[in-house]
Every structure is written in structure tokens, then in C-alpha cells.
Length: 277
Image (cartoon, rainbow, N blue to C red; front, side, top):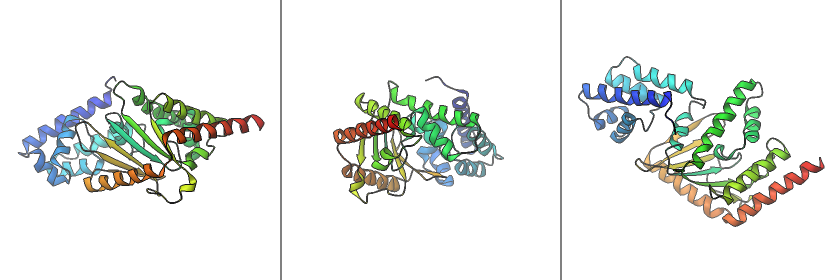
């Protein structure tokens, strides 16, 4: 994947951080302790592998007395990102993850969305948005999905609730196409999808989506999202709880074969209804 200007700016951020930290006579662990992250994360910031959140950048400025340069840089890069401020780091982490596990209670995960489904979701949340804004959001979502077809693609495990499969987002024809797309991805072994049936009743993570990310050379992390905000979780104890919740979701779901059959059946139902309306 080609390196963009934003990637180069993050590399500059890391180099500058290392220079200022060493000039202050602090080790990575020393600085990490003062800004409430691990020394390992400071090392990842300096290598440009991880991107600090705004509050961390602000604390780095305070500790190193840099006059706000790190906060300004992070703000600039967030503003240039096509993603919401709380999601831009997650999108970057997806690109370097070795494994992604996601639970979707209501909406098809962004990495699996078709263009028309993504458009319908975007317009529903932004009814007064310009066409340019909608197209930017749809394009950025499709661009994210390219990681699933890279040679170094991550393992992608998805648990859908049946509500996600049964809700005709964008209309009957759009939903049929979306489910066909998911079924094709399953058959091509790009993703492993299971479905929690409505008959399962209560289940773990009932309050929203959960995404777990694993990496080759850094600790796993978790991400949760509601309609208006998202939270990246790095605390090992919290990530472990999220992993356990995901394990409980998987044992509640149908088998992969049963899930594929349900998805294909729903797609055919939507297609048949679309032809008769």
C-alpha cells in the first residue's frame, strides 16, 4: 500500500516526539508514566505505528513543555481524516491488524458494506448532508474494506445479530445485494460470519457493537461504539473482558453453515419481495 502524506506526517510526529523526549532526559517508560500510557505505547507513537489520541498529545505537550505542537499536529491530522474524530485511529489500526473480530447488533460492519448500503446508512444519519459529503463517507468506507483483499489481510471474524440481516436498509433490492455480498465473501473465505438468531434471547454485548483487534507486535485492543461516539480500549483488563464477551457471543450464534444458509435465505426473500413490489 502506497504511503500517503498523512503517514509521513505521523512519522514526523514520532521523530519529533523522540527528539523532544530524549532532550528532556526521559525514557519511554518515564514519559509514559507521566502521560498515563505505557512506555511501550510511547515507543509505538515514535515509530508511527500507533497514533496518540488528542488528550494524550495534550499531556505530552504539558510534560515536555512543547507549547502545544503535538496537540496541534494531532488536531490537524484528525481534521484531514475522512472518519469521525473518535474513529480515525481505529481505521488505521484495522490496516495493521492480524485479526479483527466484530459484533454487529444492528448495522452491517463497515468492512462488509456495499456502496448502496453505505450510502443508505450515511443518508439516514445525515439527512441534510451534501452529495459531496455522502460520497466522501461512502468512498472512505469502501477504501477501508480493501484490507480484506490484501495479501497480508487480517483474519476477519464477524458475529451478526439476526436483526442486522432482517432489516431492509436502503430498500429490498439494496438489502438483497448486501446479503449476497456477505455470502460471497463467506464463500470466498475472506470472512467467517455467524448469526445470533432472535430466538437466542439475551446475549452478551447487548448495548452496541464491539470490535477486537490483534496485532503482530503490540497488545490487542478493543473498540466500542454508540450512535454518536466511540471508545478505543487499551487497558488489558478491559480488553480481556471484551474478549470474553465476544467468546460468549460466538457460542450463542448459529454454526457458520447455518448462518450462511440464513443469510442466503434472507437475501432471496428480499429479492423476491423486491420483484413483486
